[in-house]
Image 1 (cartoon, rainbow, N blue to C red):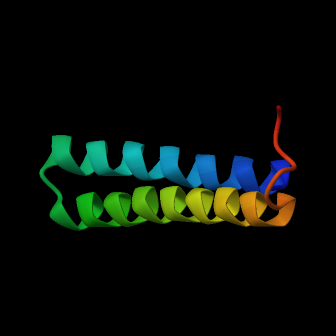
Image 2 (cartoon, rainbow, N blue to C red):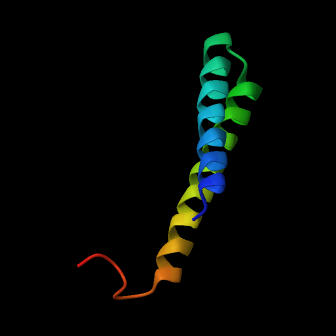
Length: 64
């Protein structure tokens, strides 16, 4: 998992949270949906990166 991808995914998640909350405060459902989509997308990409990293390391290569 590269640092740049991690930062990019976390930024997308945070942007989504902010956008979703802004939509909630203003009552704009479209903005809420866009924020939720960004938040979930960032979270899923982050989880996929973690899973890829776990498979790359392989069994038995973790801390003992």
